[in-house]
Image (cartoon, rainbow, N blue to C red; front, side):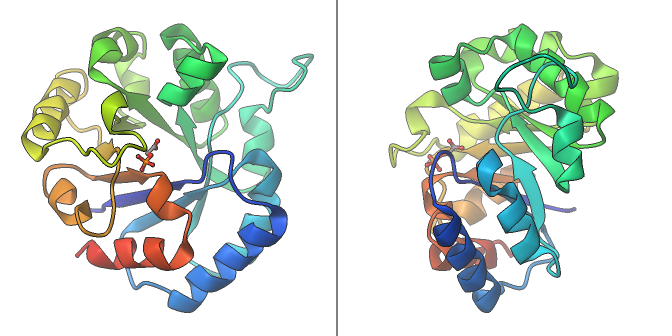
Length: 223
Ligand code: PGA
């Protein structure tokens, strides 16, 4: 079964740093039959798309407007992202909830927008709002998504979740949609990635994706 390895650069990298990352990553070219997705900031999407165009790596965005195109200052609509070859969209990341006040209702709208535009939403959840969030997404839509379990205490802290707890959350998500691929995110690195991939369909990687060589090692570590 296909495993997803998703890099979330968050608000990091200049245009030249993004280009250099792509050059270094392509030079390392980790051989992988899995799906590797790079999620740079909006302003870097075109650069990264151009650098990776002849590779098998896919492009993702870190968020999307809950609305269609129109009078929504500062927003980027899902259809605008598709035009930039974006195939995956992260929605509901805990940093979006905390700093930008996105709610589960907004995330459900983002899922609909992304799907209508033909991209795959990656719905980020944590246990306190897992039920609320997944209840708001119709099953017909949820089965077209990926779900990323990202415990708040593990994001960017080096304190990664134990595999048994991850497995239990995978079962809770499958109660909403039996086949939806569930990923894990939170302090994933090349040393621990393999054990998470045994109980999930992949990983969402923040800090360890910023260095091209470290991320290439991580991709190579997923057997
Ligand atoms: P981290 O971030 O790998 O730096 O913990 C993961 C995420 O926030 O997606």
